[in-house]
View 1 (cartoon, rainbow, N blue to C red):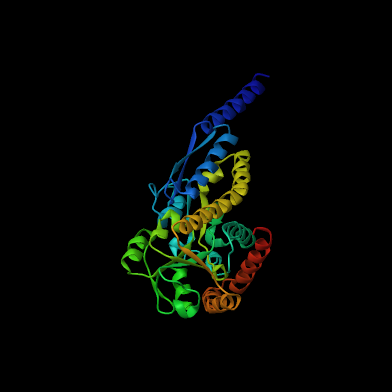
View 2: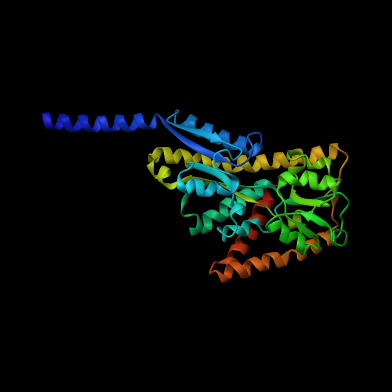
Length: 337
């Protein structure tokens, strides 16, 4: 009897000790967006919801603005345990996520909610091995990258030869449309537009307010038909994930599933604010005629074909990936206008 009592007591003590450990668990969360950005705030709200549902057993310390790891080092930082959780862009480590790159192609994303739903559906279907080094909590993606210029662009002829700020994939889109891509970070774009170094920039319309670029452009060409996106990840260190109790893991997964649309709506809200801010300054938004839209769509097809060839050469299911992404865009565009 005494032996049974000691065994039971040992189990109880073990459980209590485990509970006491979790009552003091604090995780770090590195976010590359500045603290004031809507997406950083959405990430903070996610962290608070985790804390609330675990009754404070898990606390998450959010470090925004790249203060813990810079944007291009967030993923590595999570893998190495520099941070426990991280949010950044796949595109910041070019070539590392070849299958996920399909999501950033000019597939005609109409808004951020569609782009975000597509990204998560795509990941869940393919579960790329390139992400096996972390626990993927969820993904999100901005609304269509549009053309913002100092002089009106309503046709491919207007764009020909214009110097356009663009980076990575958007640089290929600019080239395909006949423009001249000029690489530079967002932080340098305002001054470059102001000084005439470039005549325009490609990006989601939210940058017109978020980066004040509406002050130095006059026109936005509304061209979602060639709209690309930039897909962002929220991932967790595998060791830390595996150490979580199953019930806590379920809370993380349930909250993450709900936050997919939180981020999607936030992107759309930010785009709306950017549009309204630009119009309030007297800028114009140009809608392309139907025939011109089709010309732009056809012009960027080589960018998609180039991806299929390059990714296919690496043994990836490139054609299937593109077809899947295109089908998902059409599917969600019908319900998330």
